[in-house]
Image (cartoon, rainbow, N blue to C red; front, side, top):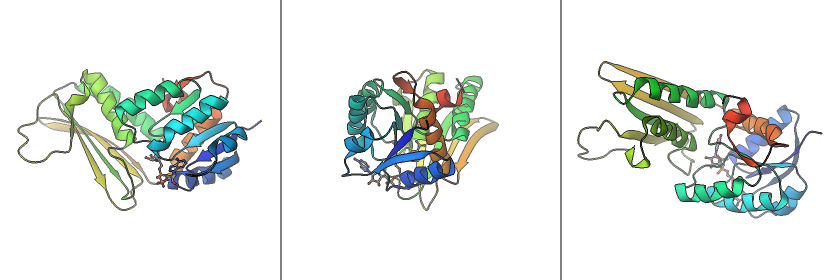
Length: 243
Ligand code: NAD
């Protein structure tokens, strides 16, 4: 039987995109809740929850899912490092797909970034630039955060290597720093560029999203996949078989 899907953050841009994509994909939406609604009651009537809400809501969402042993697809971004650690321990108690970006193209960008960071080595300065619509509340984006994580992993660097924007007399760029720049404006759904710049050449890997339907369809694909999985935290690479 097709799983009944609960949409959390249903009144938001992504919540509405998930509802539209579910119709398109012939999936059953069993409930739709937003801030102030009775999440536990709605969850009891569904088989899986798809969440695009607020980072402040993730703890309560995961606690409800754990209490009812319901699988979760978590798309919300903006969690701090400590907050995320705590939430991951909770998420691991149920089958949970947690992805900062549910698009297939971006997940390929993650794989290409890992490869480029490894082949090009530290002589190629790595910088990430992202742009999103003027309403976005967190920065850098979850996708940019994941791209940075990949570069740091490949270069064996810690978070202190990150430079969030630059201003003033910064001195020359050091070989170990990794820059991140967040642009905001208009209705941009999501652009990400990873740059590797050396003396004499520059490689740029760019993904541009023009319709948030790609995230919604990916999240619903994850919802179908996660029902029946063992408890644990998965990502979109697992869902797409890219690992
Ligand atoms: P939005 O502001 O349009 O919508 C968020 C909705 O969540 C609002 O309707 C708000 O009322 C609701 N909300 C707030 N607190 C809540 C709570 N406690 N319980 C239930 N609902 C609550 O934002 P958006 O553009 O739809 O994005 C939502 C989140 O999804 C953001 O964190 C964004 O970065 C993330 N996002 C992730 C992906 C991805 O692929 N992972 C893609 C796009 C957006």
